[in-house]
Amino acid sequence: MNEQAITGLHHITAISGNAKKNYDFYTRVMGLRFVKKTVNFDDPHTYHFYYGDETGTPGTILTFFPWEDIMAGRRGTHMATEIGYSIPEGSIDFWLKRFEKENIIYNKPSSKFGEIYLTFLDPDGLKIELTVPDISDSRIPWVTPEVPEEYATRGFHHVTLTLEDIQATSDILVSVFGYQLVKHHANRYRFASPAGDTANFIDLVEAKGEPRGHVAGGSIHHIAFRMKDDAMQLHYRQLLEDRGLHPTEQLDRKYFRSVYFREPGGVLFELATDTPGFAVDEPIAELGTHLMLPDQFEPQREEIVKKLIKLG
Image 1 (cartoon, rainbow, N blue to C red):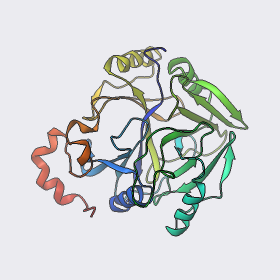
Image 2 (image 1 turned 90 degrees about the vertical axis):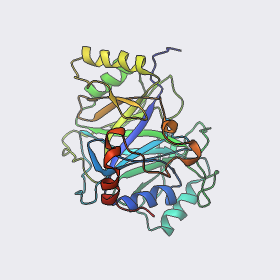
Image 3 (image 1 turned 90 degrees about the horizontal axis):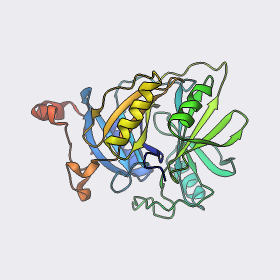
Image 4 (image 1 turned 45 degrees about the horizontal axis):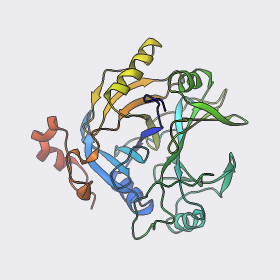
């Protein structure tokens, strides 16, 4: 296998409103592990939450910037619009009953590319799909008393981008990232990385003439692709530079290193390294239990803590 091949998604970052509501929904209702409680590098009085499996394995990491008074976003073109999670066969009924009990807005189960899925909205209106993949997902989930192993999410299945025209974006996925078009129905095109077997689908929906979306509360901010190390990230950064896509310099995000660029369809893409991971500043058994600050904000800890909403 090509050593430089992209295997799939690293993480997805979205925007929410109330931090406590977001924390309760993803840890209790969805049963995800709270992997890291930290703050926004650009706005240290705002949390940055990370949810995932036991260790925050790439391909399971959903992150949020919770801004208390954020206006609601609007789904449309030029943005990522849906997050797809993988769930086990036979678990749809469990989630239907759970969403009923928790008063979650959902649609009745449907089928896409031969796979059954259930669409719902989180408390901020973020659109999420639970998909039963046609090939069983063997990833080990985080398990809670309310969400047992036989029903728990396994990590990402796909992410959907809604675009005015898919051509330029699909060219980046195929020519630069090595993805292949594997399925197509009506205006939805599914691309997959042949080097990965989980979290490796990107769906492009072509919505010509549809209004441009607005990224705010309940919206996906960006999606990140896995880079196994700095050398691989540098390789892809150079490919993007050669394409005139103006990637940023490498930025240290403490748990991974990042390069960002805006793909031609308008969606913010990130290249994120697998290393060093979330155990770099707290033991795996204690992930998410402490407020971890980037080094530059540690001197302001007392002031920052006073301004952050209490979660428990």
